[in-house]
Length: 134
Image (cartoon, rainbow, N blue to C red; front, side, top):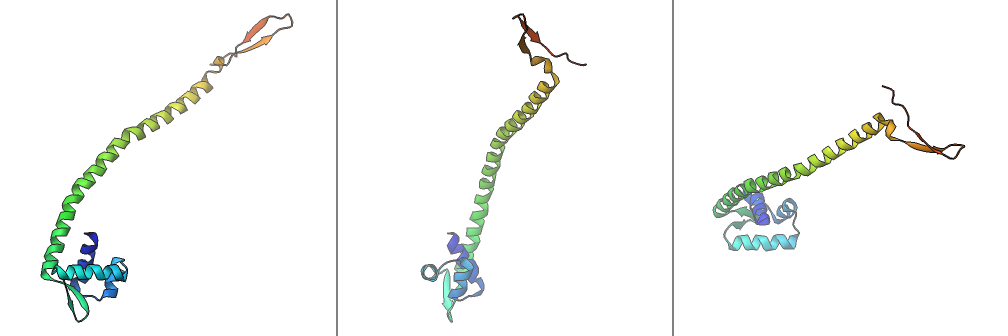
């Protein structure tokens, strides 16, 4: 359908086959097949080795564009819904990152949690707890 629309659009003012090939990004063999198909359907006509979109082709082109526009709105809405569904995941990652920063700050602010033990000369264990300067 997209190729048909492109060929009809390119040929609105009359073009040769080479122009159709270059402007639609088709090879010559494929362009030939579409040109023949569109001529058989009465959407394109050949005048002096130029393909021209017929009145029937212009009507078809208009309806195809209308249909495309009608489809684009639900597709865009679906894309927006998917983006909204992704927001909570993104938000969760952001919150997780903030929590990690807060945990790091907490560890820096509470050094007395770092308790070490040493054995004295007498063989008894002593706890060493740094004093928190306030």
